[in-house]
Length: 550
Image 1 (tube, one colour):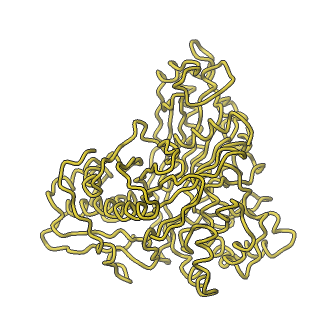
Image 2 (cartoon, one colour):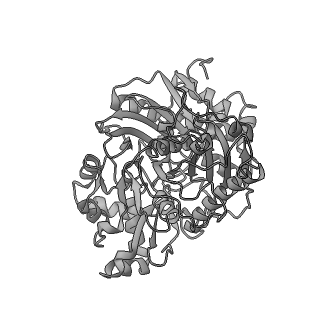
Image 3 (cartoon, one colour):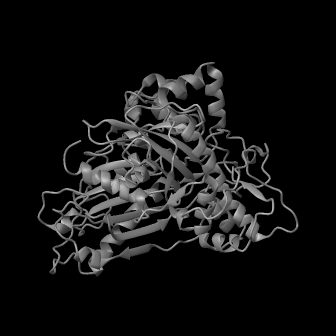
């Protein structure tokens, strides 16, 4: 998207126009609408695969069967579950997607949960749907010209800070998963900050993160405070061995391997408030300062592994169809948090390369190389990835915004102003100007660079002359204003002036928003050829990890 309009001046005061009490809030609901499975398969892509011995190949394999070089990717996001199959050239051969229920508690403002069992069942359903599609196409029958496909590896990418706890012995979760944008841990955060005058600076220097409701550690503390059965098990010297705290990647790995793997990768581990950013290890001191007075053994927290390498293999009895050779004993060889996966999928392998993802939230991330760069402008210093045990840890700066695509879902589900996300562009395009109306989508507070979990959403400047088109336009513009804030902060922290912005995520199909973004930043906005960069990044690291050990 090229600049065709004079640059619109950024309004730095916009995000300061907040109310302690919400003018507009997400109505708490349990979304119960039945969303159909979406399945796509491109048999022509599968049948045209050639043995990847050419320089254009993305994955390596010693197999002479081209179809065994297919890579699977589980993309367990906030809004939906997806399973995709990629060819060695990065083409999407098949995919399945199922929307995920969002659970909001009517009695508790800011609570947002997912069902752990639904996260798993959706994953199984999407994988089985792809297997069924292969079978329907006759691709699992061994007919010429393609032998029966078998995946060479599977990668996992996931919503990152969403946290749950389960019991090893029973396999049962203690509670619903607490979603990353949930704000129930405000009092936990307040208590940690007041416990010591150096808490904020201590955690910033050790973990690269501020103490906030966003991160997994505060959610672990809340679960211990409010789930009696979990608290009792952690206190019991014998039963505590069966307690597992994890993010979504850990849960899926544990389920896929039938409990043989309890692990996470370094990118997800960096979002807990428990990991030392330099050693990339969970530290008991950090756990204790967050979880006090509870004593949480490190054995209850996943083992940290590199992003590519051995995470086990798919167990044939995990719940996938027993006659499906597509998945049998396939190595699980790559894990990345969703935003790090998008960075990897955008091939941002060098310091100074960045991407912005417009998904449920909005996340601008820049590769900063093998040394962590502290932020003085409200950003996160985080781990981007680590390839194998002998590989260097690569770090990143990140700006996180909690609501982008979810703002459009709010317009659809709670206000009924649109019937699909695409409608927002149609209605916004009918207005030539916002006529002074602005929307601050702080439905669960503000993340980067403000870190104010008590902020709430508001619409300002509304008059009787405004209509649906203006509200849709304001919702789209809000994402662009917030991107501009983070864009400037990353430039100040890194000393790198971004001359273009690589983008991905569902929001990038909205040409109105992408054009407005280019005008707001004054740089070119570049969309990738393969739009599914998050899943592609997971496939890439799985392909790398599948070629050798951890």
